[in-house]
Amino acid sequence: MGTANKQATTETDKPVYRMSSVGCLRALVAPRLGYEPIKPRESSILTMDEASRHEYIVKDRLSETSKRLRDDGKAGFNIINDNKPCQVCLRTLGDSRYGYHVAIHTALFDAVGHLDTFFTFNDGKGNVIESGRKKKSPVVGEIKSFGKDTWTKFVHDPFNGYQVYLNQLSLYVEGLESPGGLFLLKNRDSGRVMVYAMGDVNADCTATVVSNTLGFEYGGEYDLPSATGIITRIAEAEIWARDGELPPGEPEDFRCEWCNFRYLCDADKTLPVMVSDEELQAAAKAWDEADRRVKLADLQREEAKRVFIDFGRSTPRFVIGNLNVNYKGQRTRKVIDEVKLRALIGKKGLAAVKVDSKAWEDISIRRAGEAAE
Picture 1 (tube, rainbow, N blue to C red):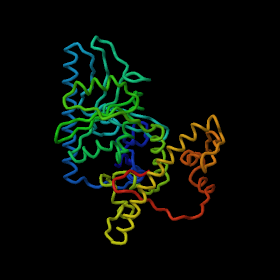
Picture 2: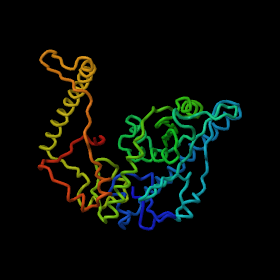
Picture 3: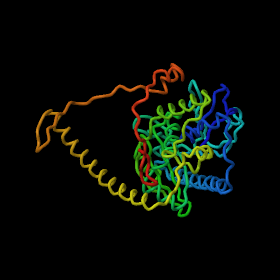
Picture 4: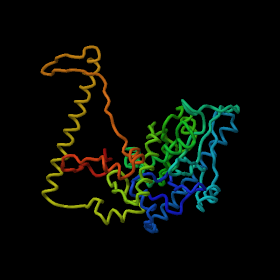
């Protein structure tokens, strides 16, 4: 998950962060401070090589579909299928990266990525079809592949635990000023490809890809996180790096087992430890059962609250049963962006205005495999 290092700079001498790796702040900052990534295991190298091979298979299928639709004079699409090294990165970074070069330039850093492919759509008569509801072509195309068990788990709960993929797609879309993207996930065992429409992609364009390509299935439409928020996160990492400090690890939010700097968290015990204890197991069972009841109650409470709000817009104060309801309209809270404030007044200035609250016991409890809230 590490991205930049002290030598990774563009022609403008700004540090480079990889769009495919915007996750845990500690993993973003570590290489900037000179920490060395873990040497890849042979199994990891084989996994990456296998993923690349399956990516080419998906591209070939798409190319075949594109040609067939074009030959038949039907509405279809075109894709890029360039597997040559990126000349921009070879020239500026000395990197042999593959794919279509995408960059976002900011005052503090450059975010760089390499797109697997992108789509443009046509009506079969030489006319371009608008592929987004708000913006025109191209549509970002990102290809991943999993083994059957991981693929099935992903399909049952898309993107849970894969925030890095969402961040990557969002930055690609922002960098290309695209309406959205198609996330294509291949099952390495069965050959099935699940297609997820991300952002603001025209449903007819998605259907053209899915319905005409062998083994492709529609997985649904999903929103992308704000690119501004992701860029702000990278800026926060860069500020940590310039201060020469390593931020805390974030084991609840990201996939630590794939992180190139997980040894830093092993050292300070921020990774979870598997334990077995009868008293703890009994407590875990009691918590789990109570948690399910609480979540059900919260859901019922929210549904009832929505009914009260709808009624309260016309009748602000009313009594129903033993409840006295007073609807006060929509309100907002004033908040301060700590990252922006820190950039304005510096680390010492921020420390001077910070005040510690009263202490409390901070504990996070969730089911294994469940995304952190």
